[in-house]
Image (cartoon, rainbow, N blue to C red; front, top):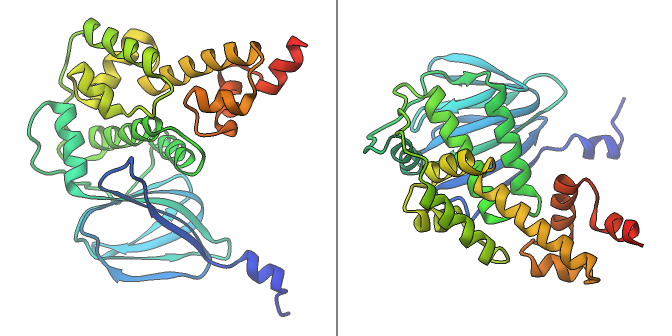
Length: 282
C-alpha cells in the first residue's frame, strides 16, 4: 500500500548542522535519519556522538559496529568510516565534531601539563553518566540558555571523555581549596549577574583554568559557577517580581535570555513559576 503524504513527511530525513559562538573548535550535528547512508569519509577532528533512539551501524577500522540507543561513538581524526540506519525506526543522534586543539586544551587544563595527543581506543562505549551529560549539553544548545551554561556543560563532556575513555588519560592536577579565588568569583557573579558572563571570564578572575575553577568552586559552594549564577539571578528576579515588576522586564533585568528562560530556571530552583508566585502573593 502506498504511504500517505503525512506518513512520508513523518519519515523524512532531518538534520541540523551549526556552530555555537560559545563553543570554539566545535561543530554540531543533530540528525534523525530514516534512509540516509554516509559514504566512506574522514574528518580532520574527533567525532563524538550519542545515540538518542533507534539503531544505526558504521564501518570503522575494518569492522561494522552497531550503534544502538544509549551508546556513544568516539571516532578519531582522519579515520575512514561510514554510517547508515538499521531497521525501519530511524536513527537519532547528536554529534560533536571537535578539533584536536580544542580537546588537547582541556587535557592540558586537567593535568596542568602540555598534552601532545589524545586517542580513543574504542569506537563505541556504554557510559550512562557521559550519555546524560551529552543529553544535557544538547538541551542547553537547543533551548534558551546562558553562555556560561553551554561552556560548562561542554567542559563536563570533554573532561569525562578524556579522563575515562582516552588511551592515555590525563591525571587531574590537585589544587588546594583556593578560598580567595572562590571568593573573588562569587563576588564578581553577585555584582555582575545581569551580564552575559562566560566561564573563561571567571577563570581569568580566579587565575585558574576553567576546569579547576569549576572543581574548586563546586567543592567550596556546592554548585558549579553556572548553577550559582542561575541561583543569584532567580533570587533577584523573585524579589523584583514580588515588588510588582513585570515578568518580561524582570527576565531582561536579571540576565536571562527571555521570559521562558527565566520561567524554566525559576521553577527548577523555587518549585513554582513566576506567574504562580504572583498568584500565591495575591
